[in-house]
Image 1 (cartoon, rainbow, N blue to C red):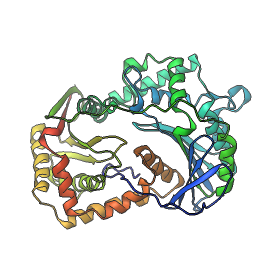
Image 2 (image 1 turned 180 degrees about the vertical axis):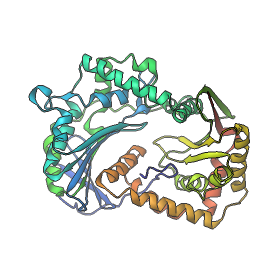
Image 3 (image 1 turned 135 degrees about the vertical axis):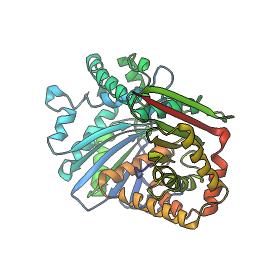
Image 4 (image 1 turned 90 degrees about the vertical axis):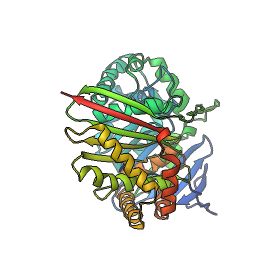
Length: 448
């Protein structure tokens, strides 16, 4: 999905197709939407998304695993992220001693490869010239089940992850967001940050990694997407050759059962740390990515914080009370946060800006919102969505985030749903979800 902070995705029904675009033994064509074909590999439950894009002779291979920090429990926090780092070490058929280093092999062929971990997913991806498509598929298939974990490598990589942890803790915005989530979500695992808590990070063992890997890195818990100037049948055959060696595990994939209890009063977070500026933050609970209210919440976020013409920018930045405003309605697989973050101008009190933010929201609740506001927000979002289709890598990212939200088709239906949001839809969601008794407020005080 677009990376701006004021939009997201929602549920759809994918169109069933009477015949598959291509037929390769072992695969069942599930549906086609937005030029993307979904296939199911019957042998092991692997799902495959293919899209032919001819604007460049390249392809992006991405494997999205449905595992992230939401799947961690106490004493495991950050484990999904640590595992992501360790997946770049070695696997059975990609060993340094054989001069088949995971990083160097594709790097020497001009590929761009990386990975990322978030709350609901972990992804690995390579953008390669077409002659090297098979290499990328072979690599991802091998490390799906044949990764090698070594205690010395873990100790070395733990230093890297601890440095990343310190970067997070030294960012005023990220530390405030972390503490806000910890206050707003008390039962659900969205309570803890993707990077994890330091005491957990320093307690990782090879066995913990192996157990987590075996539980979630499996073909029936992954989606392979290939976007680029590809031949669909050839690509499916390559996926069959390399991913077909993996069997579907017999044990079930663990399900997240914890649900956040209803919030029954305002919660507050206060942080006092060395720094040169202050921040004010708000968070309210909003529903999961598949909920029908998500499109209207996306539009509301854009109305409040999308660009210089947005309500909060005019009320705070144009008046000199703040230097920046961001509003996020980005949804996740489960109930998550509708967030506002304001960087205060020097000398401005948190309470002053807090009052203005709530007054701005209350004005929308009472109907001080026009069709012009709706249309402006929709145009901004349309531009953001369109930008995601600009390369094979960004298009693959868009699919990945929709997969994480619960349905890859969200990547295509959200723009359509957002375009049909009405003034009444926005009034309904702001009155339903944005209330004084369900908000969490954060004050970051930067002191020199």
